[in-house]
Image (cartoon, rainbow, N blue to C red; front, side, top):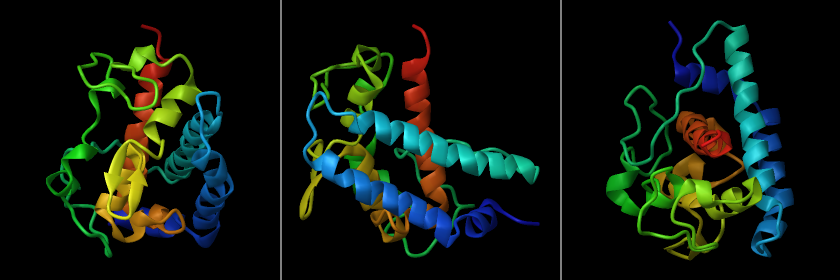
Length: 190
């Protein structure tokens, strides 16, 4: 009987890895010079939605279950082993990877560091939302700045630390499904 780890190993070919790496390589320049008018955030959200959508389409054709999201404030499920990985419990290593309250419909007291919004429905455009999720000044990590999105990748470590190899790690897909669900909640009418 095959597992999700097997499915990712079969699906994450060099072509898939290159597609992900090349998107990030091409778009990093715009992220580094991001401003409130930038479309980087929209590109980030739509690329990753299509990228995980293709994996779900592949899974559906093989009569496999669709992706389920993974919340980074919970340990990585035991049925998704992968090496190399720095931790299977990233929240215990770095509590800032929990979903910020400004990415919830309920909101909270903490504001996103780019626009100052306190809740998900305050983002006016998908570009703003994507910029806030993957903007380079959300949290400091050793050696530089990282967005909430990148902080999750770097805390897990191993293959997840690089856009060239992240899709090899089964948790990559569930993590991006979680991010896509935030985007879907923002898109949903109030």
